[in-house]
Image 1: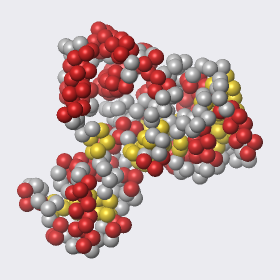
Image 2: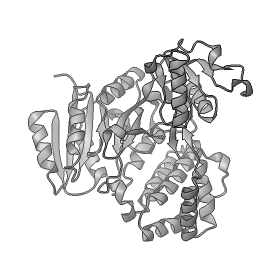
Image 3: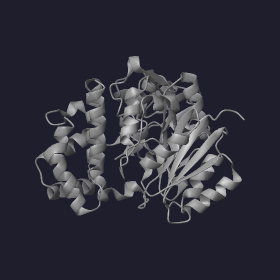
Length: 444
């Protein structure tokens, strides 16, 4: 039998409703020499019976049981028996794309990386409505190419991806070398493991594809119960800070660390549904947490997430009820900072494209492509090219719109996109299959 390439570790707790989807995604993986380590965390439903059923069908499954101690302890248990060259983590209500393990594994082997990071999608009940999430792999914060090492470490190390383990692949020897463990918290148990892995890795590789699908709206998940332990994520990040200081590398990553801490402070605050927990976290942020994370006294230009900084400033001089009223008014008036993302998942890497649209969306797309070098822009057109003050931008009739592999429509409005698509087909005879448009808004 060939050596195990990847050990997939899955903590399972009362997941009978979604478990089969997750397990099937592993069975159908294009990478076959894997082991699937499922750790039942004291389930009281039929989850363990489902696991036994799959074990009978596939001997790659390893079943472990523990009393209810939460996902961090379960992942550590799974790691203690893992034999694969690499470690992968999947939650029992999510699923991997069938090529995920193979693509991440081949990337790790090619680049000899300690850690591989890839993109992902969020979905609710309907898998077909999954949508790209920029925070899992922020293209605008990545350097050129597919790998960066300890000698050209990016400034925004902690902010180009989220502090979750399931959109990453870890070299097991690397994990063991630094004795990386998940904390025993109910929530945010993965922060310590992931952030220190990013800091310690000699080489990090990137697969610019969405390979994980993360389920939202599951009230039974720990993410859906953050009102029970609103300050746990704070303790997790403080543990990371302490370790970085201990290793004499905190100063090197301080800006990036402050960024991820501030973003998580605001995200967790706005995720809380229960009033008492909201006030508890709000007051803690205001009275000590922002200071503990060295955010006090910094300026807006220090942050990649300007919205989070604005909310920090507001919190420091307003009460919890004022914050909620202000937030309600923002939602009502539609005041948000929008982020746009090029449709990487629908475009073949290295292909030639024509970009249609030179407004805010087009400018974002252009910068993302130039920075990532994902594909080649052979033409950029806009119906108002005469006022764009850029010699590279042409009117649609000035270039051959059929000369590229794709025409990517870079506009936000779906009605306008439909009109452009109609014109491309009828007026310029562009093959419909070559025309790409999807809603570019990823954060609004």
